[in-house]
Amino acid sequence: MRFHAFIRIQFFDTFVSTINSQASIAETLCFHITPEAITMCAIQKDHTFSAYTQFLLDMFDDYLSESNANNHIYLEFNSHSFSKAMANTKSVKSVRMKLSCYRGTPSLLFDMEMLDGISIRQDLSVKVLQLQEFSIYEEPNTAPPFLKLCVRKAKELRGVLSRMKIVDDAISIEANNQGMLNVSSSNVTVFMETTFSSVQAVDTDTSTVISAHMRVDIKSLMKALASIQVEPKAVHFCFNDVALIIYVIMKAGAGNVTYFIPGQIVEE
Figure 1 (spheres, rainbow, N blue to C red):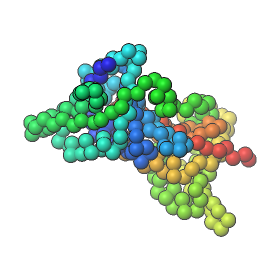
Figure 2 (figure 1 turned 180 degrees about the vertical axis):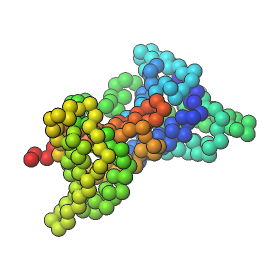
Figure 3 (figure 1 turned 90 degrees about the vertical axis):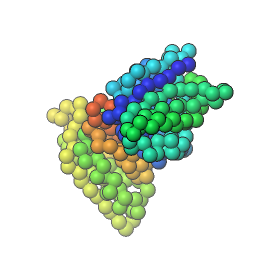
Figure 4 (figure 1 turned 30 degrees about the vertical axis):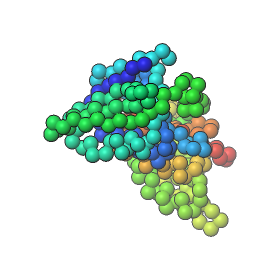
């Protein structure tokens, strides 16, 4: 089993900040390394909320993934340990990742050359998983979305939710392919509602109105929005019968993040 890659320095901050942002979802994260990409999996303890980050090969140089499992490698690691290892790395000139095993203990080595010429090695302990152990991290097998919306100001929604969370644990999202996105929360005494503009349908024929009305957990949605650390190229809200799927496209071909938030369709 072998893995190594240089992280292109223009993507290093994105790589680190994206991984650090997933610590709010799960303490334990998992890398699924293949010859095509690195996918990071984060699953909330109660398995009600999950996120999958795909780092594409454009982020790396000298990339190699080899194993007896069809060149797939599964590495479990502690998100807080990663954050500590990556602290004080603002003046990095180059970074190389390498899977190592010393005296039977696997680790992911980060060899960093700093701008002042100093070389630093950070050692991140990992657990190598077998395919059957990795099954808990598999992406949910859900139906394709029937409605996709590009939400240009998705990060602003977090401020709205912070006010709505005192009203109820869940929010109601009403949307359609005509550019409508309403978010509301209510209890027996209070009703709050916000309408978002700058919403556009994606891959949808707008000649026929397609609508969605769904209730989702407000804390899970806030975690997803909070973990969008860098300015994305696009954020898509996708609705199917069982979940709100948020798809974040990173800039410059770096990759994407997919959040699965279970939801309940509201019958009209």
